[in-house]
Length: 329
Ligand code: CP
Image (cartoon, rainbow, N blue to C red; front, side, top):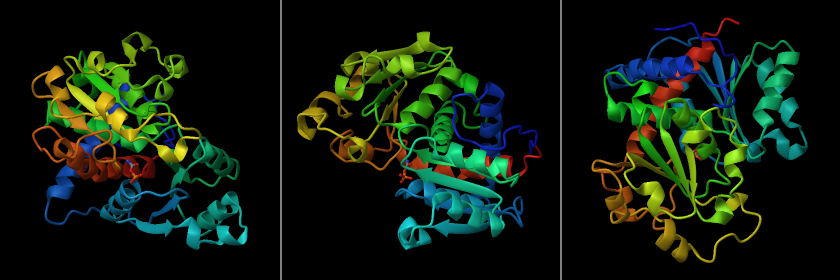
């Protein structure tokens, strides 16, 4: 397996290279085989400690990182803010250094504040800790492991035996929903554009400001499109990614009603008739059934890749932990 990985922390996909994407995809493919084998486990990170520091709720990402670390034979420490010494006034950085003192080698961090994992990584570097930090979702900023498992899922759909980022060349991918508040959209935009896809964003103007495009710092801007209607985004699309309305990040009322939102932007079997035959639908979860996607479509295995995304999440996170766990600096 490839161990020529040059990145200590994984905080954003903004500056990921094509070579890095391909290294993650090929490593994840190997770990998917491990997960399909009888033992499901390898000793790749034996003796290493992975600390899951989730300061914000999570089901998929946290459990997936935990399982991935265990499948690599690492020791795993889980942390929940509500039952931790944060409730007694301990600071986040003192919490982090406590885990470092216990021997954590990799810290997987989720926080509602954009930039918190970056800040922790910088402080740990100043302490020469040797700890790698993985951003498991920071506010509205980035969610790199979700972007990479989405990429792996799409590329496996296009070539199950040899997923590679160049398979995206010329594909049309629609991202529909609460783009404004979505760290998943921000990560996916970078990976999909880097692979040569056309990315079409669709949402009401309150969830997709005209200037959003200017905030994307990509050399591939000419393949990024913004729509305030669904149809132009979905027409001839190869893949459709739907996003949850992130009510926890909305400081004001941005939509007249959920019913109207579903009528205008909800993804249904009927709406998929605008897309290419064979179109597939993704959703990072958690899903609000009947809002951003109809319940029937979510459960329709002919279209929905949602279950595969979750399954692939373990293999992709094994790949990421393996790569940064073997980073030599
Ligand atoms: N997709 C995702 O991040 O889900 P969780 O919030 O359940 O981790």
